[in-house]
Amino acid sequence: MILTGSEIHEQVKSGNITINPFDPKLINPNSYNYRLGPKLSIPKSEISDPCIPGQWETIQIPDNGMLLNPAHLYLGHTHEQIGSPVFVASLIGRSSLGRLGLFMQLSSDLGQLGVIHNWTLELKVVQPLRVYPLMKIGQVSFWRPEGKVEAYNGRYQDTCLPTPSRFVLDYYSEQQGEG
Image (cartoon, rainbow, N blue to C red; front, side, top):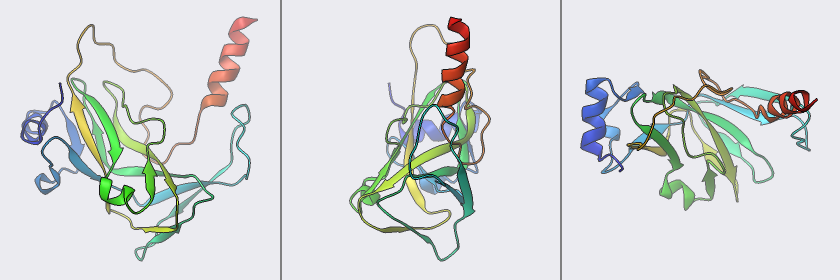
């Protein structure tokens, strides 16, 4: 079951949901608008290989914005720390930015129960688009889980900046475990 905006507000007040900083003006009927953090990471290599650790450059988004180009994947992060030990967060883009050609959370819109951090955002554009630090860029909704609750204990918890893929670490761990 998805929480309504008013219920998100109540759960933030009660401490069951963390959105920090929290602004009640950013509440929607069944979500909360989160903002783009001030940094982006860009791959240094033209080719990504999931078995080789990637090289990334992290840059500050200027106050007058940064132009995103279609030939690149950008990793951003939420300005807010978001999460809950009680509800599952789901992060998606805003439809108004989608209509400008921005695709967000290409493959990872579902958060993990119990993780409270600044979420890494996957950004891809189909035409050049300027983004600005602290602009409303997406929405987070919260869902009540059913069944036995197990908290996430993986490699992406406790992040605060754009975090590149850690697949290579998983791959090598799995290979060593098979031997």
